[in-house]
Length: 203
Image 1 (tube, rainbow, N blue to C red):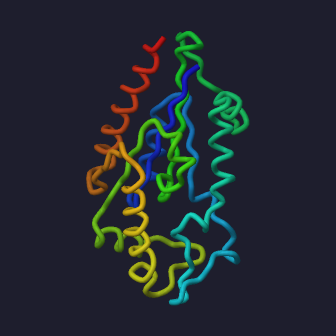
Image 2 (image 1 turned 180 degrees about the horizontal axis):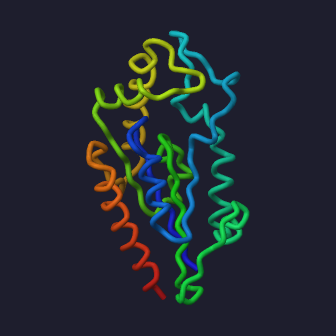
């Protein structure tokens, strides 16, 4: 059995979840771990001097819990899938040629060093400021974004996190989030499939 860990990162409302879900649907024996599921309770999220909740930082997330989930998958992907109610798909391939794929999706996945170190492939979706702001305005969050939140917190933190990410991570494939979702899927899917085949051919 072989494993492949794929990171799909990017800015808010860039299309991470859409791409990750489509990738998962296309690849047998794959599953998704999404960073958004690991936010701490709203009551413990710190507030900055402008009164904005500091969601766009690692301290707002239970990254240790998320990392345990990733490590659990890495130890035994088949058992992990069964615990999630999914039956692994066994093909005609021998056991040592089976490849299990984990898609890790989130806006700060490449900023958390222990997690970043396990990725075999890294993709980052980016979109322009105006498109990001418009898409964000159509989304309903709990709690909802207060007035001025995007320009006062979300975008500045994106720029800060992006700079930090680029200073500590290499090997990221940057994707244009303005492309059709089918086009983005094709780019990543073909790349991941090539990596799966390469793993199968290894002794």
